[in-house]
Image (cartoon, rainbow, N blue to C red; front, side):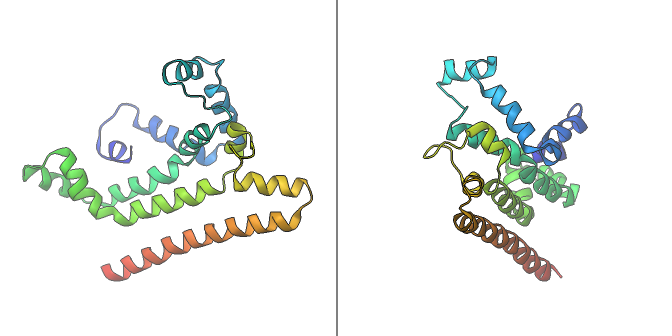
Length: 196
């Protein structure tokens, strides 16, 4: 997606960039609600997935996984897109001039030059997804042993007034998030200092 949006002339590019970016500003429960309706067996798409692929996405781990991918898409696409935009267009032109095809240019020329962007995208997407609440609750329902994740467990423990258990879960998520950002910043600073 990042490559296509950056390098291809596609109709209504601004529209597709907007679609990818919507989860950044849309309340997670709103996105979760619409995904719940979309995945529902009463909906044509949900019915199609059930009939032809035997996929039930409502209140299932697979549903949470797909919903999380949609919700976290901008955190993956935008850093990679920014990495591609930072490259000189002459890299692509030179690669084609030397007889390289499009796939070879992507994997042997472009991607090696945006490793930090890809790494940042992966870490940010992971950290963002681990703590997600609204989309996961709407699509997964927080079923113990099936779709119950850490962020929902925190909410459940607070609701039951088990603050010490909620604190443990919350602290673990805080540490994971902090370490994720720390790693991104450390790697970025190392690469920047090597480039100067």
